[in-house]
Length: 138
Length: 152
Image (tube, rainbow over all chains, first blue to last red; front, side):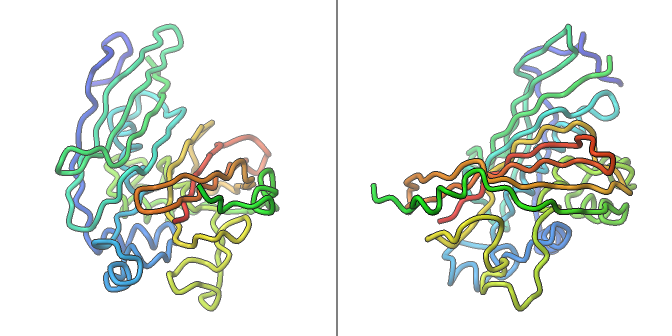
């Protein structure tokens, strides 16, 4: 079903998605963005030298999940105009995180929708808040 | 609070790097899309890059001999040598004029727009804010990104 601005309401939730990174998925992510930082793949270094409790899940990967939350919801019915996120709390390999969001503003005249976004950990803490503005076609 | 940033550090605010040029391949988009578990076919086929594909797209490519013991490039990123060395990505703001597509020949220019300190729960933090302006081969805007890195 296509997304039409007339059908949307402030407060509507975007579909949530669970993410459980693995050593393999983190390796592939860091290889694809050319990030050699050892805290994302070398457990001994990460815990003993940088004193993290475990392998660190990349902040920009969580930023990607937030962007996906919007682009998956939007499909081909519009374009992402503005996107932002920040890393607030470290997350580690073994955690399952949930991405989601909700509509905070609708500009009917310009067909623009603003959403707030989150990645939460199992305790319900927001580890990466974000936001986006999208331009709908209809 | 003791200040870690000196006038010499702050003099870097406004510094602009020479342009970096990147040619985007469909295969690189597909690799990124698989690694990030995209679900839309336009990304998985590599017809278009997901928005966060921009992360580190214009990052320095250094020989292994020039990497520090933590894996990051020595003198990582544009800017002065900071008194704190453990660096993490802090966040991004992205304004997209159009998506990145395979075959794009992009030019990126980084500029330091701010540097500031905060006291974190485990010690001092230095925030460096860099703006990235990306244009295509015709000079048309593609996106603008403001990225914050945190040294602790």
